[in-house]
Length: 198
Image 1 (tube, rainbow, N blue to C red):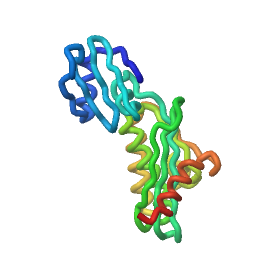
Image 2 (cartoon, rainbow, N blue to C red):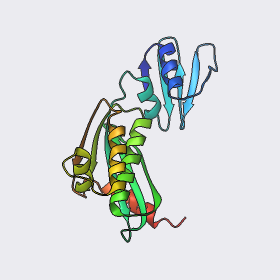
Image 3 (cartoon, rainbow, N blue to C red):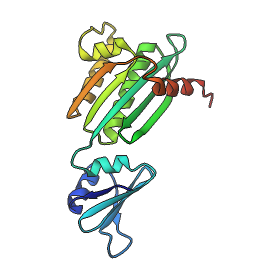
Image 4 (cartoon, helix red, strand yellow):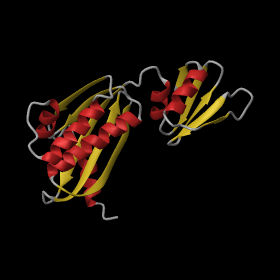
């Protein structure tokens, strides 16, 4: 249960700016309460206590700095083009903070890789991280985002622009290529989404 020493009024403003609804406290000691994604922040005179199953998102919004996440992404396409899916996970020193996988329709493998990277960066921003170290097993995507390789396909160029816009929202970022075995969790999530018939 994270406890953040802070000014409750400033903390309330941060949450409000992020679109989190603020309610009155339940007791005379509670100044206010806010809930997001299964976590609850409760403000007292000089601190905010965050509790629940997924406190990281609220904690990062309340802290002075949102901290750093390792962001892993992978896209999959069966048929190239064919049915596609994305997988991503956010990792901190506390372990996996968030992860996801979903189908995205008919795409090429490179389109799926970019879609996975975009979704992963959106999740890192939603969680309030201000630094990201992005890792993926697609050398093409990594080198295109870095500007080392050109993106000749107009759709991939557009996706690269979107990725750079998202990256620029972080105070510091890096992107690097890793072997598939290092990216195994994101790969598993993308393939599980493809295998899921529901």
